Amino acid sequence: MADFGATDTEAFRAEARQWLEANFPPSLKGKGGLMMREERVKPSAEQEAWRKAMGDKGWGVPTWPAAYGGGGLSGAEARVLQQEMGRIGAWNPIGGMGTMMFGPTLLEYGTEEQKLEHIPPICRGELQWCQGFSEPGAGSDLAALSTRAEDKGDHFIINGQKIWTSGAQFADWCFCLVRTDTSKKHEGISFVLFTMHQPGVEVRPIPLIAGNSPFCETFFTDARAEKKNLVGPLNGGWTIAKRLLQHERSGLSGAGGGGMGFGRQTPLPQLAKKYLGEDAQGRIADADLRTRVIQNEMTARAFMQTAMRTAMEAKGNSGPSAATSIMKNAGTRVMQDRAELTLEIMGSQGLGWEGEGFSTEELQAVRGWLGGKATTIYGGSQEVQNNIISKRILGLPDLTQNH
Ligand SMILES: Cc1cc2nc3c(=O)[nH]c(=O)nc-3n(C[C@H](O)[C@H](O)[C@H](O)COP(=O)(O)OP(=O)(O)OC[C@H]3O[C@@H](n4cnc5c(N)ncnc54)[C@H](O)[C@@H]3O)c2cc1C
Image 1: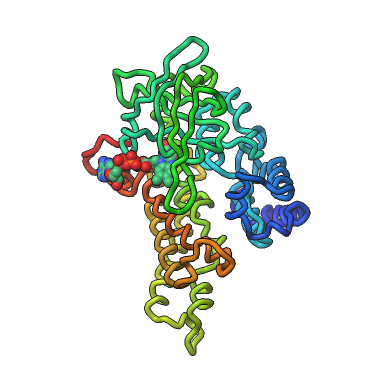
Image 2 (image 1 turned 45 degrees about the horizontal axis):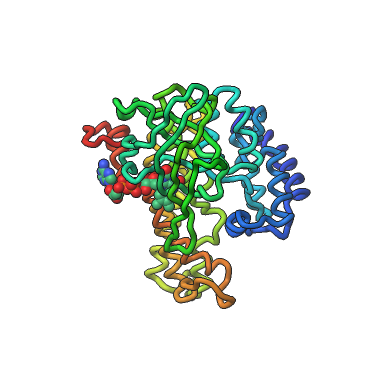
């Protein structure tokens, strides 16, 4: 199907509009961010119905192959779907690490059996995945990891500790990097999958300043991973891990359509006019803030245009590249600046933690600002991305041992 064909996409637009209007519960309009957090506690009947409808249709992962439960749409159709969802305030109920990073990686490196087993539940939003990469002694220097997997014939026995495991307390499965050869660093790492619902896995949530516990310490004591769930060759996990991190960075930057969600938030100029008023010419009343808001808007738009262009250019290639490090650094910086400006615009109304005196948008502001601090750390810190950019894109001498 042609990716730029307006005729094809217009026919698809009508189909998407009709389906969304028939299936999206209007009461969930514009409530995506909040609902997804609450959903982890207790999804409402309407949330469940919406997840199931999107899952059955495959539109939560619109461009994934239909053979594994994806939508099978072209890039152009997926963009139309996103526009049509935005038009009625609908949001994607299928998300998490399964869709953002693990799924695309398994589609590339998994066996047919692995894809058939693990991809469909991700497409339907039935199972959540967590990422067992970082360890207390292995963050930026990820290949220093020491969690061991011992070969027991048809399975591995895993012992060790992971940290900062986002969503481990809600996860059903873990994609995990384990050491299978202690004599080599990068070439002694394997990529395995196992269920979190087993006696050998212990999860301890870590509270954060933003008022929630999005991640955990995770301990493995004789945890079991079946051999059929080794992805790629034994000791060949590093290549797969690097690929997965590219998908992660692409998703975090917002370049993959998620992450920053510029389109889902009230535009900053509109927000500023609401809180600070307008001057005689209809501009944001505060001249200094106006300049900074416009600078952020221009950078955000330039970023999104670049993201769209690179996505189109990459269509013929095999997927994301080292350029995702540039996009991650640029995208997360725009997002952090936006969070700062939002607080400044809202003033004391932007500092509310809870209570009826604050709107939903106001309550999200300070938590978003605090939570956003982590974006330049996870998925590989800003400094480490700069190292990758200098080494892999600019071809400067390699002065580090990091990925
Ligand atoms: C909110 C959040 C969620 C996370 N979720 C997950 C998850 O789900 N799964 C998972 O496996 N991990 C997760 N992480 C871990 C994340 O990937 C690591 O925090 C990150 O890679 C940095 O590692 P570190 O914290 O050990 O810091 P360190 O590696 O100790 O780095 C400390 C500082 O030194 C700098 N630094 C380190 N090496 C270099 C270098 N060579 N050159 C220049 N500067 C350097 C870093 O930039 C950083 O500023 C999460 C982290 C956060 C904050």
